[in-house]
Length: 144
Image 1 (tube, rainbow, N blue to C red):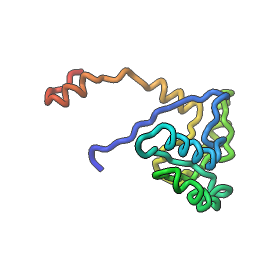
Image 2: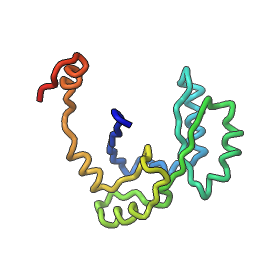
Image 3: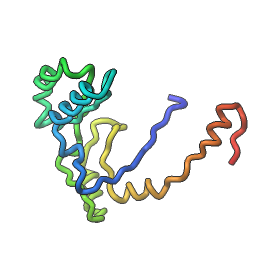
Image 4: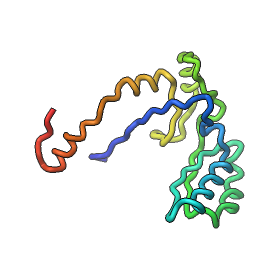
């Protein structure tokens, strides 16, 4: 649709950080219910990723268990199961593994990218030009 867009925000995780592939559907639901009970006044927005092969059959049981602990939850099949996290800069091997993944949706909210893709995103960043947006809101021509 006109006037819409998407933004990519790259993030490099260290070896000490667990990725979504390493956190089970049950643990994600538990963390969301904890936040719902002890932190949020309103609904916690949560998208739980799950392995369709191993956790997919457990969805009814998970929903039944957490039905009174969460006000709402979304589920997203995880396409990256089994792809190891690589911080050794072997970009060709990493990109070969990532190319084999079939994404279930055209525009995933989370997607694993290679180290090379991350560096390209990082290198393409520039400082935001907030003054241009402010001028546009005030009906003035943006300056370069």
